[in-house]
Structures are given as C-alpha cells and as structure tokens.
Length: 527
Image 1 (cartoon, one colour):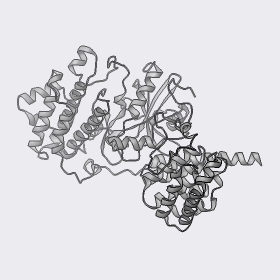
Image 2 (cartoon, helix red, strand yellow):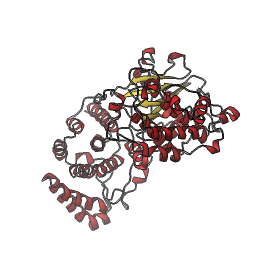
Image 3 (cartoon, rainbow, N blue to C red):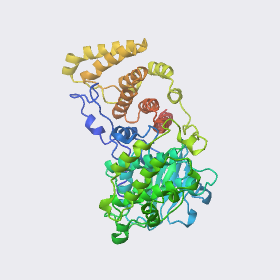
C-alpha cells in the first residue's frame, strides 16, 4: 500500500522511550495519568488509540462512546468493504455520474461505513489531503456523522465515515410524499444541525462546504446528523471549491470563497427546505416573507399541524440568514440561541417522529479465534479474568527488563516493596479488590520496579470497583512497559467496553488476539 507524506508507518508508541529509564522515577504512580500518544492515526488492521475517542468526547464532543478511533485504511480494505466499489453499493444521490461517489461498505468486523471516493483530480496534493483528513478526524460529536478514517494510496483519495442508515433530509422532505415530517421534528433537525455547526466552529472548523438537505443524514435512532465530508477544504484560502451549491451565497459569486457567513446563508436555505418541503429560491422566499405571505411559504401537508408563533420565528430567522450582506446575518451561536427554546416533544424519540423503525446494529464480532482470556474479555466476565490472572501469576513479567535493581536500591527499598506486592496478591486472591488496589499502589508508588502484571491486576481491581477509566489507564501503562503483551490489550478491551466504546473495544480485542497468535507461532518455531 502506498503511503502519503504524513501517514504513520509504525504502531510504535512515541512516548514509550521516556519510560525506558524508570529506575529513579515512576511514571505509573497512582496519582499520575500518563497514556500513549494519539497524535497520529493508526493503521486499521493494527493498533488503535482508544484515547482519541475518549479525548474527543471529553473535550466537548459528546460522541456517545461508540465512535471508533480515527485510522488509516488501505485501499484493499475499502475495496473489499464496498464489494469492489460496485454500483449496488452507491448511496450518493447522483450515482456513478457524480465526480465524487459515496458508497456503503461493511468492514470485516461487520461495522457499516460510508466511503467517499474522490475523482482522480480532486486532491492532487496528497499531503494536503492527509492534513485535512486528520483535522476533520479530530472532530467528535453526536450531531455529526463522524469521520473515522481515510485512504491515500497512489492517486486514490478516500474518506471513511460513520454510516447513517436512514437516508437524507432531502429524501424525507422531497421524495416521501406519503410520510411527511412532522413540525416538531423539523425544528429538531434545525436545532441539531445548528448544534453541530456550533461545536465545529469552537473546534476551529467553522467553514462548511455546500450545506444542504443532502448533507443532513439520519442515524439508526432517527436523529439528524451533519455529514463530516463538508468540512474538507481543498483550498488553503477557501477559494477554488468545486461547488454544487443549489443556491449560492452572494459573496461566493463575487469572490469564489466560502466564509463563516456563507455557512449561515446556506443554513437559511435549509430552513426554507424545512418550512416549505421543497426547493425554493431564496429570492422568491424573501418576496413572500416581505409580503407577509408566510402561509404560502409553508408546506401544505403541515396545515393545522404547526404553531404559527414558532413558524414566524423560524421564517424570521431564515430571512436574517439570507441577507445579502454577510455582516447582517446572525452568527452560529445566534442560531442555537433562537432554536433551542422552540424544542418540543423532547421525550419522543426521533425515529418515532420520522415514522420509521429503529434499526439495531448487528453485534460486532472478533476477527480471530479467542483464547480463554480473550473469550473472557470479550464477554466482560471479570470473574473468569480474575481466575486466569491468578493462574498466570507473574510469568509474563519475565524478560520485560523492568525488574533490574542496583544493590543500593535492593537494600533500601526491596523488602517494603515486595511486602506491599505480597499483601496485594493476597488481597487479589481473596477478592478484596479495594485493599488490593491500595497495596498494589504502594508497590507502584515506590518506583523501583515496574510490573506489567501488577498493572493488569490493578486494572481488573478497578473494573471490579466500577472504575473503568482508571482500569483503562493501568492497562495502557502495562502496554507501554510490555509493548506486545496480549493481556495489556485484552484488559484495555474490557475497560473500553465498560466505557461503552464498543468499536474500540473490539479493535483492541482483535489486536490482542493477533499478538497472541504471533506469540504462539514464535513459541512453536522455537520448540
């Protein structure tokens, strides 16, 4: 597979080296929070970085926990997922006639994805494409169809996003004559999309190209989400967009540049779609508004089923968004502030208001046969994991290079440290997990020795005490000490599952199984 200039070429942890000289200082002390770096995307088939997703949510993304970490895909991955980019897999409106085509695909772990395949000339600069993908890939929000990866292979440029199974706003508004969208749902669409734009604006991604009803998608819950593809900028100054704008902002016609105010203008056209149920030229809509013919603007199917006061507010907001001068338009924050108070039926699920059935995702499955430990971790069977860790004892600490002590360190610290570990082991064996955490923490805090087994055991203790964040941290630290130790990956998988980060949990489970398989093959060759 060809690699772009900034694509990662190794899954080696960039922070690992700082832990090599650990005899004098201890990065794994219980009051520290060190974790592997997530600055670079990982290979799809290799190690993932679950902290990328967690960090995105913690930063305000509120991603819901099931968004997989951003990674690089091979062209073969995506070719297989889309059945060789078959016409039957196309989900974009214009089919194969479009210069850039979106396909529905399914990965080997059964996750559905949306794959956007660009024309050969769309991104001549591979470095810029990767930079843009990395930037958009940092966004994580429950109102977005999040970008989860990219492929840059030779002349091929592809983006991979979460798949939204319930069609576009355009299809629901313009093509479902027998199932019109009720009024409260239309307001919800406007609110959720303004939330998405507001979040992205605060994250430095305020420009959105070609905002329209085809860019708004409905997830398995029926909730509206904004496609992440519109955040990709194929020009560094905002110019030279290959635009498909149905109703172009006036300033775009003048300067060929999309601005934050242009996004607000396009949002105004979406409001017109929601009000009228059809494509309506902004100039015509403004004439109706100025003539106070609001009823003529409204979709006939909504007659008698909407609040006149709410409609007046929405029409007024659309009018402000469509002002000729950019400076006269509201900001994204103004949109959110105006729309939030209009929300009704907040306890009614979106799929009910859309009149569709809730779609359940097929369970994700591991790609390899699992060992007893892997099977226990896949089931989150903490009791079985506990029994396996007891049987394994400290065999996996051998050869990690973490237990070398100077004579001075041995005489001063060894006795107390080993006593703390001994008492921790006893508490662990007797299932006194809170006490085990305390004793293992004493052992770790001394800092003379670092034991991946102690970290794995304390990770399980944290899980037993319903502290999955701390459990994930310990499992990640164990990975840093013992880079290819399957148990460290398995324990991360369990912690991620407890955090509802199910795709990351599955990715980590597969990584652990792969390392275990590699180790077994090595053992057979050496015997």
